[in-house]
Length: 131
Image 1 (tube, rainbow, N blue to C red):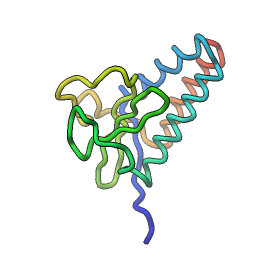
Image 2 (image 1 turned 120 degrees about the vertical axis):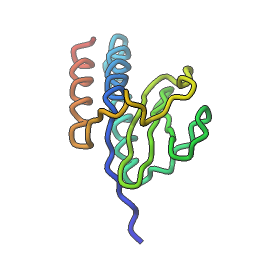
Image 3 (image 1 turned 90 degrees about the vertical axis):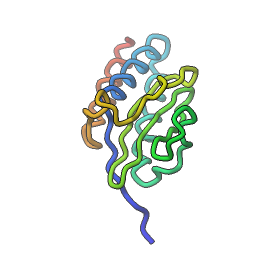
């Protein structure tokens, strides 16, 4: 039986958060920034076929809202029938705001799979400039 394949999209807020993290890491280590960026993009892309692999977000206790860790960062996403929405990317030491939902109005604007690499390009440019 073939694995179910879903589209993966990034909420604009998650994309911006990833860029902010990468820029911060790049201040100390370009190589570290590129490594985190690469692992975050690969983790998100892998959700197309392995969406249920992440744990249910403990603060929300909703089986559709899951997360995987990329180093010390939490990549949170919502699993739908045909799409996975990457909703948040933040340090694991911070919890999501109470009652936060991956499909809240602020997270509905998203970037599709092919366009999500623009995030990576923007963040990688920042990393290569040492910002």
